[in-house]
Length: 195
Image 1 (tube, one colour):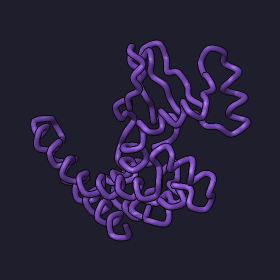
Image 2 (cartoon, rainbow, N blue to C red; image 1 turned 180 degrees about the horizontal axis):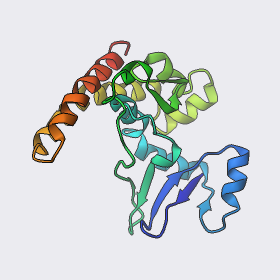
Image 3 (tube, helix red, strand yellow; image 1 turned 90 degrees about the vertical axis):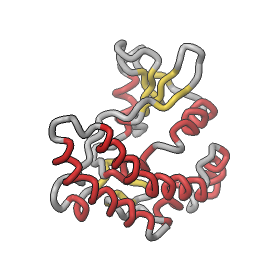
Image 4 (tube, rainbow, N blue to C red; image 1 turned 135 degrees about the vertical axis):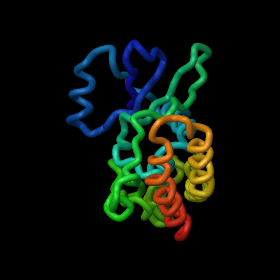
């Protein structure tokens, strides 16, 4: 199930919760939401494959829920991942590297720095052969998910360092860097260790 975002962002779509109660409430608002076929969903999921929860997990974003993942449908019907939004890392705050949790678990694990091979295997459907086959057909095999998480964990600290360097003229950037970069680096290292 995907939802159209408001008129200020035409062509964008957004994932919605699919439980029965939320679904009934959502569908009661005509013209806002549309059900999609498995093929449509698989096509859109391929776009999310390399970005999704992994980035939020690595930088410690506790507010990464379904409505914070969006796709943009361009005028020529190309599906693109919308830029990240509503992203604020909790790792800048003392103690969050030990107590921080994601809004949505990855394979049953929602603690920062604890999403390892087992959680990614569960996410990729290893406990359900039919689900695993469907996910594999959409590019979500266990190995693809592990490669994505490892690649992001390796490059995230360097990318964040570049942002801090390129934007150092902004007020507060040095202070943010001093509170955020080391915990993100530690979280990425901690995530890489069990992979």
